[in-house]
Length: 215
Image 1 (tube, one colour):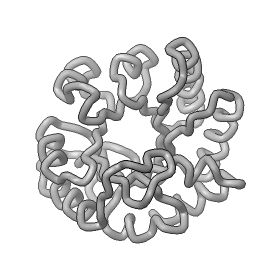
Image 2: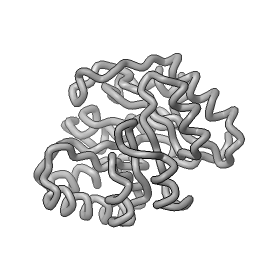
Image 3: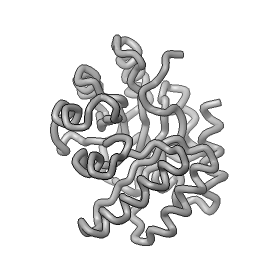
Image 4: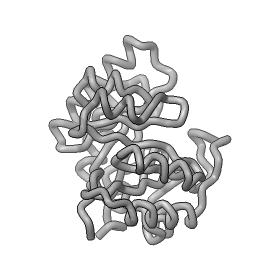
């Protein structure tokens, strides 16, 4: 298997929690269960509260050896020295983000249900391409739906791209420990969970169940 530019396995995405202490404890539990990467995603926090929480999240990720990704905002990722950024199609230029962050940082992007977007993103040198929502999502109930075929197509595009290490394929949206196996079998290198991980009554055990899918 070719080396990846983004960790293989469980990719946590933070819920909209105001309680930072609760969030940090949940991140630690997920990391203990095998979570490899974490995306800080807050849509409702004030700029000051968001900055304060993001700073602590990046710090605990560094302590836990978990890759830290900031959602939407490469400038914030640079400010906090996070490991990278995740960008949607409304979040600015991938080329501009790469120029600003350099080649040592991770850039991932949403490709929704569109392999053509993945092809363009790979040409721009992203480190992972993300497809979804794979299943109905409580976080984004109106999200477009991707299929296992989209994961397969994305994996083929990534494998055919000459970049080494190769870009990873991430699946997101409505994924749980119980429904993730077909997504992994279709070729996802990483599965991104929000509610399916952080709403669990036993976050560490759920993380371990997800991580085991990649053994």
